[in-house]
Image 1: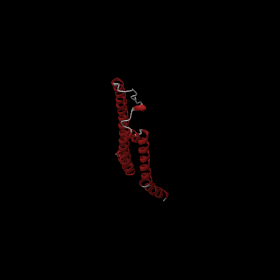
Image 2 (image 1 turned 90 degrees about the vertical axis):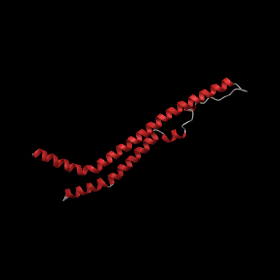
Image 3 (image 1 turned 60 degrees about the horizontal axis):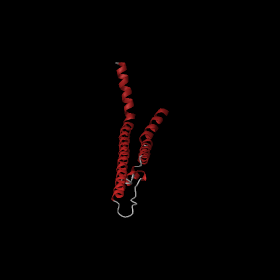
Image 4 (image 1 turned 30 degrees about the horizontal axis):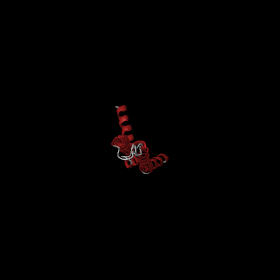
Length: 130
């Protein structure tokens, strides 16, 4: 009698509480990777100068050379910033996609596992006895 009760309690836990905890775990991991890669902050500051390096035009009057120098430095700083931010955003997005794929795979495996264990056990016994 005790084994039957244990079996039904396990099945109840396996398909109710464990699934909700698994979904919560996925949510926590998705939140962690989103903030680890700073996807939101990097998206908002996408075209900001990298490391706040910004050359100010401080020439008195009109000086084309100083104006061009500050323009080039600011342009290079923004291009480097966009490239680095793009790489981090893409890495974060790929990590989130990999996490989602692994979650779906593990969720399907979790649903099938209680049915698969007896099937494999009986299949192994039939192979052993034949």
